[in-house]
Length: 309
Length: 299
Image (cartoon, rainbow over all chains, first blue to last red; front, side):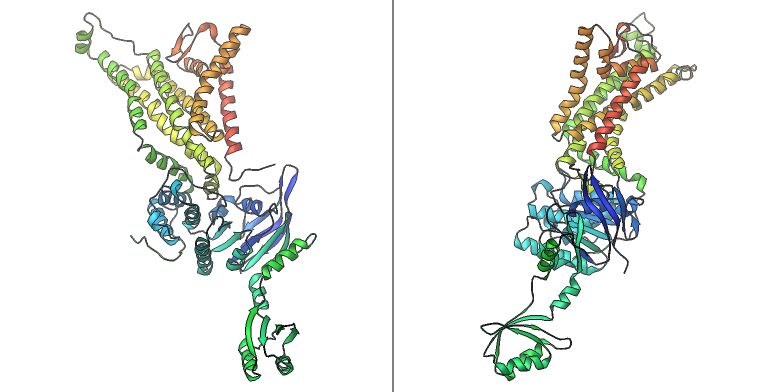
C-alpha cells in the first residue's frame, strides 16, 4: 500500500523552541489517529503538512509528493477541517462551501452541485441557505466538514472533529467519518484528545509526546489480538469446568465470585465456551473482550521517557 | 441536476487553471457589494465628475452650444494637461473614499472569523489571496480613475483632431500610470490596515487617519522645524508631486490636481517622493506578509 505520509527527519522550530524533533516514519493506514497531550506537537504537525509552517530541517511527503518542493500540488490533494470556528462572514452555508470548492479548482457549476450534495450529506440540507453566523456550534462543525470534502480530496485532516458536539451530534459526526473511511477513496488523519473518537474512527494511531513520536500502532492488529482476551463472570463454576476450559487450550486466571480471565487460543470460538458451560451446567453471566486497549497504549506511551515506535 | 446524494463521492472532473483562481475572490466580492444600496449610489455618484468633464469637452467643441452659453467667446475652458490632472484628482479622491469603504471589509472579516486556514489549505497561495482581495479594489478603482480618464482623452482627441492625440500622448500615459500608482498605493494601504485591525469600522477610520492625521503631523513638523521634510508624511502631497512631474506641469504655488495640490515653496525632491511612496508600499507588503498566514506562530 502506498504510504500516505512519510516523515523524513522532520523538525520544526519556532525561534529557539523546537516543536517537532526529527520525526521519522511512514504511515499507510486508511485512517490515522493523531494523539498526544496538549503541546505535544499535533497541531504543528498538521499545520506543517498543510504548508502553514516551514520545516527547519528534514521534510515530509504526502502520497510521495514533497511538502516543500511541491506544496501547491500537495494542497490540491488535501481537505482540512480546522479545530476552531472558521468561516467566511456574511455568507450562506452553501455559498461558503461553493466558494471553497471553486478555490480548490472546481468549475462554478460543479462547485455549486457538489456544495449542495455535501450539505445534504452532512445533514444540513435544510439549513444551507441560512447565514453561517446563525448556525449552532454543531452545525458549524458539519459545515466545516462539508467544505473539507466538497472538492473530493485524497487526504482529509480532521482536527478535533467532535469538539463541542452533544452526544447525538457526536455520534452523527463519527458515523460520517466512518462512512468516509469505508468509502476507500479518501484517507483520514484524525487529531483528537478523545481516545474514544480515535478508537472508533481509526485503524492506526500515532502518539506524539514532547515533539517526538512516542508510539505508533496498528489498532486493527491490536483489536484482533484483544479478541483473544476475555473476561467472564460465571455462576456454578467448579473444578470440572476449569479443567474443561484448560483442555480447550485456554490459559485461565481465576478470581473470587466466579470471575475469570482467559486467553483464547487460535481456532477456538466463543461458541465452544458456551457449549462447555452448558455441558457443565454453568451459567456465563457476563463476557467481555478486554477493553481500553487504546488507553493502555496511550498511557504506556506517556510513561516512557522518550518513547519509541 | 441531482443535488441529493446520500453517500460521499470523490471528484474526478476537470479543474480550472491555477492562474485564474485569484479572480474567484473579486467575483464573490462584487456579488456581495451589488446587494449594498449605499455602495451602488456612491458608485453612481462617483461617475458624475467624468460625465461633467465629458460634457465640457463636448461643449468646447460645439460652437453652437458654446455661443449660447458664452456669446462672444470661442472657448469655454482649456483642455490640456491641467484639465486632465484635475479630473484625475477628483476621481482619485473618490477612489480613496471607496477604498475606505470597501477595503476594510476585505481581510479583517476573514481574520476575525479565522477563515485564512480554509483558504490557504487549498491550492491557493498567500500571494494569490492578496492578489484576489486587492483585485477587488483595483478593478473598482480602475473603473473610477484611469478608464474614464483615457476615454475622455480619446473623446478630446477625436473631437479636436489635427494630431492632438499624438502631440499629447504624455497626458494619456500620465493618466494611466498616475492612476495606477495611486490605486496600488491605497489598495495596499487599505488591505494592510484591514489585515491588522480586525474591526472593520476601525480599519476604515485608520485609513483616514493615515492620510489626514499623518499629513497634519507632517505640517506640524514643518511649522516647528521650519522645514519642508514633514511633507514626507503627507501622502496626498507625495502623490500630487509625482503627478505634477508625470504631467510635466510647471511647479508654481497651488499647482497640481484638485485635492492633491503642491506648491513651489513646499516642494521636496521628486526622488524623495518616489522613495517615500515605495517605502509605504514596502511597509504595507511587510504588514500583509506578517498577517496573512494559515496558522499564527506563537514564539
